[in-house]
Amino acid sequence: VRDWYLDSFRDLRSFPEIKDSKDELAFTQMINKIKVRHNNVVPAMAMGIKQLKNDLGRKVEPGDLPEIHQFLDRFYLSRIGIRMLI
Image (cartoon, rainbow, N blue to C red; front, side, top):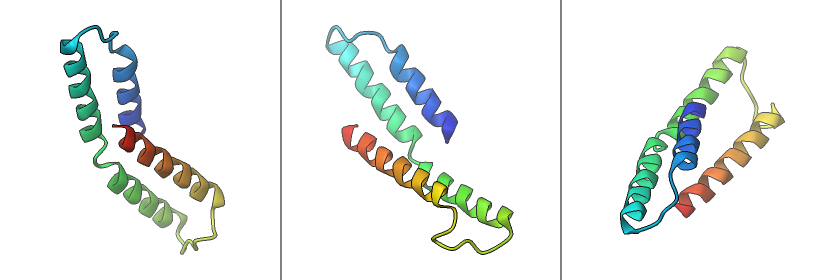
């Protein structure tokens, strides 16, 4: 998942300045490609959390590991905002 976000950031940063409608179309296509690239983020994150629970070897209660819950809250809120902008 991290690599998907790094690739998308690099794509955005390396895109040249938009000067005409051809550039705008290319940018729109790149944005659509990025959106598709990130379609599997939620299932991948869910699999990662499931694996974490298995690796801990115990049942994890909702109140356990508050730093992970805080990270996931920020991550998903950012994801929602980015997808709204797209």
